[in-house]
Image: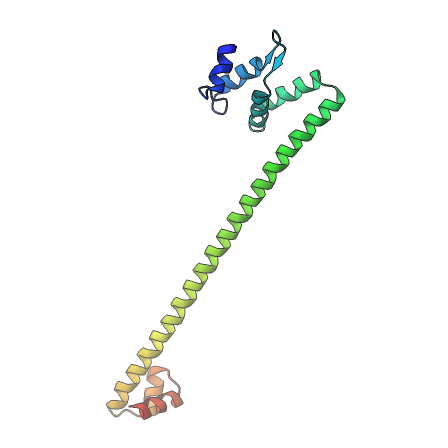
Length: 162
């Protein structure tokens, strides 16, 4: 167990990605011979237990068996705080993601709106160009208005501007 602890302290043993490492560290974090408990290992495994259900259940059973009521309440309080912190962080991430999606949607809407405006402008310019050419050919204002879809007043204004 001593070698195992040394490997963990040198970051050569990864309990985050190895189930075996988790369980070995769990067994080795209490050294009865020397009367020592490795709190750093305990804290790391406690955080890992939030994602590993079997480790979490083991922690819960172990804690219930080995602690007094006061200690149990402190443990549960600490565990709740950790879970609350994770929930707050996840909520913040979701809100940021939602805000980014809304911003993207608004940007897309603005682009579509500008494209529509530009299309209308191009269409209007095309109608006016056709109206000028028809007026240059001597066509009647009413005819030009019917063909282009421009109002009579618009066609008259185009005729004046020529």
